Image (cartoon, rainbow, N blue to C red):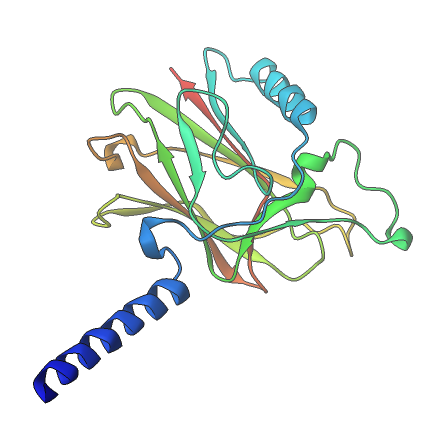
Length: 219
């Protein structure tokens, strides 16, 4: 009887530990940590996609667009951009800060941010084709942010830094709008399913931020 109750106690203790681990660990039960999204402006996104199609480099085709902060995964195109972690926010100027720079949209005011890296996955990549990734980002509140972009093979064997560490433009002090950066996606990093990992990496400042991401298939 004592052996039975001792065994039962150990089973109950292990079950309790497993329950607590499942409740406390992000991604437990095979799911990503839930991210609270900002309000999505479908009409603004549709207009932005149409504008990016018109502004595409000669011979290029828009294959993905993600409005950071309002979408976890891109809802347009044959390639897919997915955010794997982070938080969302909407930059809003104080009343005495003056109007936003001309051409700035709500799509650039909503962001993903993370303490160190914003982890992203690009999927649906064809390794026989070429792709150009574009993003917008800014140091809206003049936090002194410096960032870079890292591309990583899914198993982590190869790395590249297509956007070197650089200071972001800020609105709060200098009145600057967001900057646009672009780089060639290293398709040889893609795994058999066409996945490539990206990181927006904080080099200096309170956190890493990004406003928009989109991809062109280029000749």
